[in-house]
Length: 126
Image 1 (cartoon, rainbow, N blue to C red):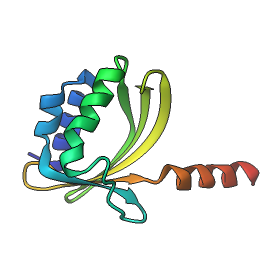
Image 2: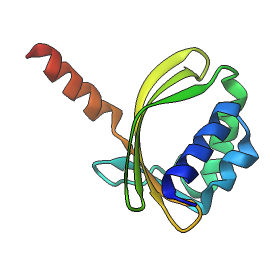
Image 3: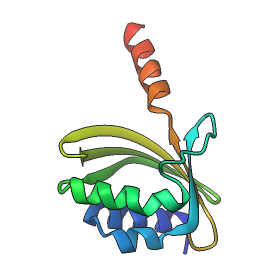
Image 4: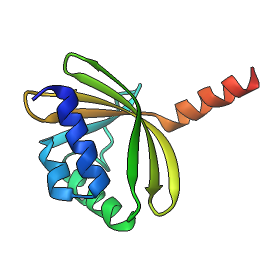
């Protein structure tokens, strides 16, 4: 299955809040990291992955992610997403970089939100 189809599949399962289907698209264990530092997010990776997303799905009945743009290069898929209904009623903009193996997502980098917010403030000031 092409990498973009694997990423699209996990996104569809995320939007249905179907935990088992969502998890089926990820390697076990999966590593989630901050970008650009590369620091592993221990509260999301490995054994924390399932309970973290289970709690998110249970607490977010209106959760929905919409892809604003997608770039695919080999085994890397980069999604810019608008996520609504996050942890209740929050709306967030997210950028996720997925590294896809032969049949599962093996690593995900999330662009550091603090860095993104600093860049947005700089753009607004110019």
